[in-house]
Image (tube, rainbow over all chains, first blue to last red; front, side, top):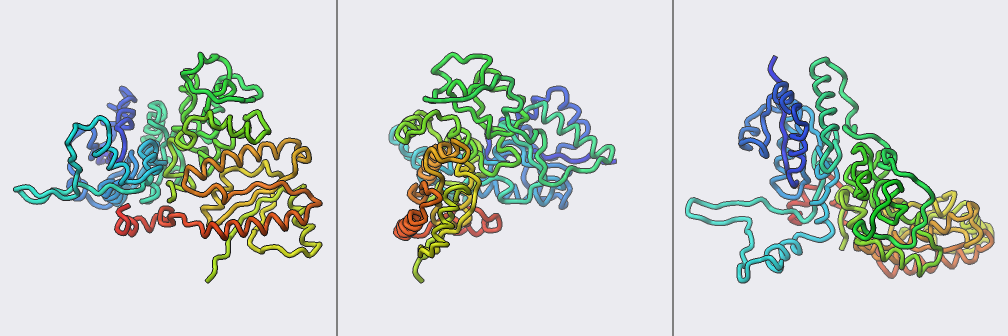
Length: 323
Length: 152
């Protein structure tokens, strides 16, 4: 029997997801043994044309990491959808936009102007701005058009499964690979379409081992401002911890180390908007019923929108800043 | 055609919904623009409900609950007040006028106040004009068209 084919692709992402796949250590040998790796631009030299030449549904499984924010990302997303039996949104960028998705707080023009014209680290006098087309002696060079709005993979193509996390934890990736091998080898049934793999349904607080008492907050603080109590809930200590609005599955590693949850595992199954849920949780713990004092306490939350929507802006109810 | 605001009103079961009922039984006339949703407590109104309303095409969202001290669940309206404060910040950050969201306390006996609140809010929203969300951002089938038209 021919080996099942595996593809791994990155769109708008940092490469951390690819590293996380390698983090499964010796198991990666099992992956290489069981699968025929047909496309993984981050690790090996493949060309898009190799994929274009494949039959429809020739790839058994595609792990797609990265958000969709350029014509190239979109084209390859469509291409891999056609060529794959199972397309999996792998990691926070593909499933909910993640850090690249913060671009939805502004627009393309502002980003281009900052990066190529006003950023303090630019070489003075070098006003080179990338153009969609450049004529050289050999012909015309094209670079893909950058989109104004960052989108998630499920917003542009049909996605079968979602593996959340920034990046997905290696033990969870290993568990998913075990499950896939089990399905392919032993004919186990596939989970229902749309299932979130490698995570659980509850929120991060469910895995957190810290003590929880009544929370009454008069002032929010940032992690560098205090030495944290190792036993007590971080939110109780005044930190904005996204645990209440974030899916569990990561093992609550950040909170165990004294760093508040940033929300990378995305929204739990019964929530539609992570930022709104976090705002709701935060409002519950503020200890005041005086309007002016509430505003003052809210002022102590540093960059509230960027914090609440750090990983999920393109997948949120409003998607992006409206003008 | 003139603009008729579409407003979603979340009314708490114990005070404001009864207040609205009183306005109705007393045959007080008020603007027909508010579509009411009865919630058990104004504290039940999650910021997500507000965002979802705007997403679904509302031009304004009205939240009404019991006056302080009257909450059936003791402090649900306190939580509501804090949630509305933070939701207004979210709206502002997302480029939506925070005035499109209003919180009012209406007791069960204040039918006339409900009438006044609905009328004034409807006029305020009429002044702000229709809410224009970037619709294409939500519809996957329109991605291609949007990419072509807006360079998105």
